[in-house]
Length: 185
Image (cartoon, rainbow, N blue to C red; front, top):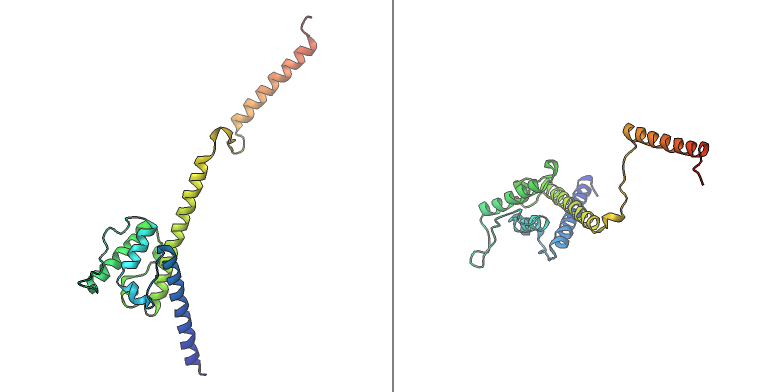
């Protein structure tokens, strides 16, 4: 087997792995089955917009969807959907380094477009996971009975030390006075 053939096989295997990874992420989040040809299902941007809205509701205000009368969206509407998805990702907090471009998605996810889209979706899901954990943490924190929780403070300040020394000296002075001059019976 030649080097070129081996490289093409490795490239095809890597692309298949990325497609399966992307399919798994989207199907798990949206709880729906995607068609076998994932690239054509994503190029119109509808599923991606739904994914963004799943992670942060109303992050994509308008989604152009195919209708029974016109089952295929125009390229302009596909681009608009993908642009809306990318803008929603920005608002949600996806790092610019991980954002795909409109061309990465609308050109059929060929070449580096697929890996860029996977990076975008993974970062979007990472943000969702952080938000979910933060909500869980704050919900658990609010359930705690505040009266039973001891407040944790930092190291004592100079003021704390001075007040403690004054109180200790008053206490020791009182003990010494009580020993020297006991109260009458």
